[in-house]
Length: 404
Image 1 (cartoon, rainbow, N blue to C red):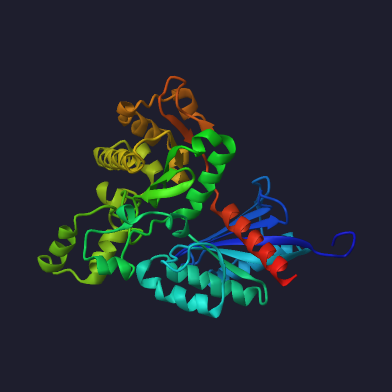
Image 2 (tube, rainbow, N blue to C red):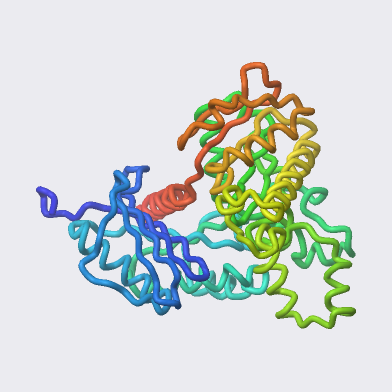
């Protein structure tokens, strides 16, 4: 307890995936998480990893069978009670992948909001159901505590039709068939970091490469999303860990009509068996494994990925009629010096000159382009959870003012 017997206020950020639940605890007024945890392999036994503010492992006094998201939420509850017994959760913020056209910013979760999220499941079948499951689990675990949804699609709602439409009958666009774009929480964080550390560049033309198991690019002009490689769903654009990325629709028709595939079979191939995994002949969807393997199959996957990233950067630059800054982020973007080097070498025609020493350095935000590079290149670690917490704090503050 604090000296005046009042519990310290805190905010909780949750990121629920198909078989995982990430959580981060932030004390009031802090932007560095006091505790971060990851419940993995939900539904198949499970694994729990928790760290403190210094990155040191924390161990709970019991083990867990993570049969479902409710069991994972119990881990969160137990971690809070064990390591932070004198805190009070003010709000819980959730990452929600798809917000459709209705949600263009963070919002308090109500029964009506949940009904609308249920309708969006068909647009993000691999993510939305688990986001919703995490919300229900948190509502049960923290009754009466405000729950807030933060959408990966919201950052891109500033895009114009020429960048987010499809060349199909226009009435489909009016019905919501359009390029929504994703990874918006990551792009929002990088956008804010660029504004903080390089305000002049922020007012210019920035391409952010969010390269991870899910991968996409975003063109950000004067702080607003102009275009993105991801489309109607999170399968479009760049090749990813197991997702195919951009694909001729005729291939889909071929699989359905000539190969006689079912919808479920086609979905499995495009979402779970393609990307780096498929390109490498089933070797791995992990860039670290592919880099270390050094085989022909691994190199084929890496080269294909790099080629599509470079083509995507050029496309994003074309959408803005120029580019001043390229930022690498997310798992591959932050940790693969090989991918960063290959991409920059292939963008030499744009005036990119890489600083090899800076590129090979370890973790941390840094400029990786050389002094004589016409195009600045940075590596900035992303932080989706802090964006969730910032949104939760802002909405809660607005609510207090409105009630006052």
